Amino acid sequence: MSLTLNLQSITDEKIYHLLKKPSLIWKTLEPDNPLICDTVKIKSQSISGFIGQLFKTAGISGFLKKDDDIEDSTPACIEHEYKHTCNLETAWHAIHFMLTDNVYDGDFPMNFLLAGGEDVGCIDVGFGPARVIESINVKEINRYLSSLTPDLFMTFYDADNLTRKKIYPEIWYRFYADDENRAYIRGKYELMRSTVERAATHNLGLLIWINSTNLCTMSVPAYAA
Image 1 (cartoon, rainbow, N blue to C red):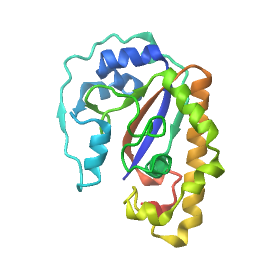
Image 2: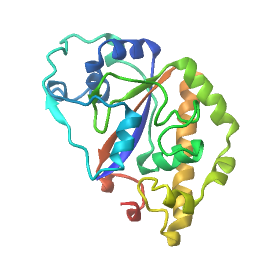
Image 3: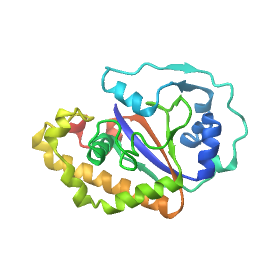
């Protein structure tokens, strides 16, 4: 299993509803699963604090709790919306570090992947709570990324530094695969950049969350396990 980071464009109206009632996050992430809303994982940490602890421990223990506050009726904006999605797979931590030169935090807008926006309550959707970024801030992120071409972004790639900082998934010391690592990170950066651009163009915000995925379903090379 590997940790993957996902981005999804959403409206500011939807962000308002999610922040007002965080349990609606399940209607967004699992709209076709009638059982997922019956049980939620609760965790009180912020996403940045969660990630910081994640890489210091062998695993995360959560607890399951019945969410009695989930309503049967859901605002239409939660259920029906055209959206752009992006899965950064296991490249997310390297991309964040290359953007910020910081392991878990950094300055906005560079740090938006791991520390930007606002937590959707304290509901653990896989590995920590999801976060939302309003459309006005997505436009600022897009302006920054538009100025950072893929060629320029890749000048920040340093396998030695990624290894020293223990950037997930800690594969950077395998120098025989350096070309594959570079191509993988660049491809995911380009995908993320285009997703943010589409969201900004359509005046949409972003929903960001981390969960675990079976490696065999991902495009990441097998050596990245």
